[in-house]
Image (cartoon, rainbow, N blue to C red; front, side, top):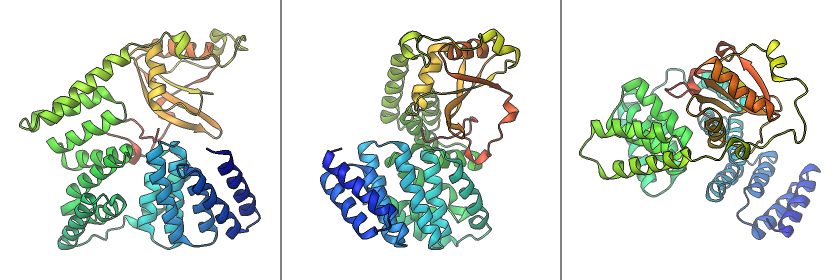
Length: 382
């Protein structure tokens, strides 16, 4: 980010706060001209349009922000912010269906429980029985395929979402929409569609193959191999690409097994200090459970990083349940362990390094089933 671009952004922010939107836009446009690869400038521009009630321009700026964010691998939170603002813009225009679509994408990109509340509120409106005819769904499917072929991904998503309103075309619409999500690297959203297909219609070779690709892309290599093998069993004649994915996944697993020792892979939070209370004393008021919440971790830790830390401590004996904001102002992760003994050992390692640890009964956390994949793991954007 160039200093000149930052200066224009700051001037734009000052103008925005004083509601001088024309000046703010001019500065954000200048910042984009100086540094066209920064998602923040596009997000700021979208915010101006939203305040001016220019909702169509706001959506266009949000779409550009998402595009730039994908290309530059920007922070998931910034991409999710653009998606949620697009949802707000559509909601202001009364387009509940598109608003819900964007809010769901935002939630899959980064788990924000304020967005989840909006999803729950809008779901009651949009999922009332109101299907479309078979012929209409065919028309939307063909439109979506044409958009997909021409790399018009947003239009393709919109068409496949409309086609999914017909129960007779739900399976095909979800499969095609998942393919689009994979193409634009929104893998958690793709997994949601594929899980719905599996739960509603059962498994198929094509569905398992798409799932294998998604799982590989989110670094779930062992589950990717399992899905690819299921796809191979159902469609043994389509082997070459599946075989390559299996080879790549096994290589990734082998590389992950070579991990640095815990003393180097986990940095202590408390330097040259000991926790105020010895761990055994801590246990007196915190009975051991198989579910552990760990907070005070760096906010730039994604799911893969957290899994590596767990593997460094307990091998394959722990599984991540959730990564994100555990409660207001506390970023962390929740993990389940095979036994209480393993849970206690893992918790002690994190505790001794200065991380905040808490044991929880599994029943204490209630999660909406819509946000679980088929294996029971919460879908996050990390």
